[in-house]
Length: 108
Image 1 (cartoon, rainbow, N blue to C red):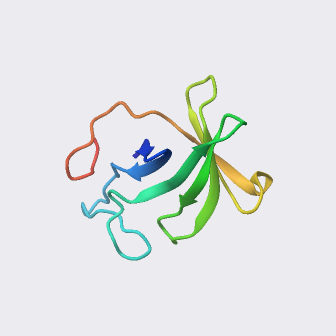
Image 2: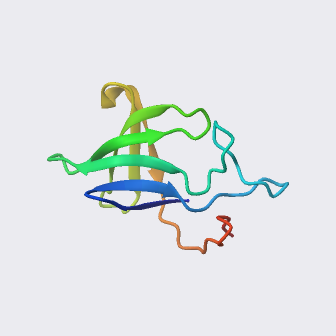
């Protein structure tokens, strides 16, 4: 679960909920820190093309990629991470979450 929010004049995306493993342990990032409250999206700025451009971090390996996000008419947010130019990337669709996130960063 990633919350998109204002961070100064830009937008950012922070993990606010994760699916716990069967052992109940919080997933960890590449440096061994819990993924809860990890900032994945940074420095997203609105450009003339109507998309927000910034960076996205892969919590599993720590790699940082260029990114753009946008919200088409279908209401499903798209995130495209890439190296160099958007053509060399992958797009994910992110659905809006309507459930409840617990204080321990887990959701049901």
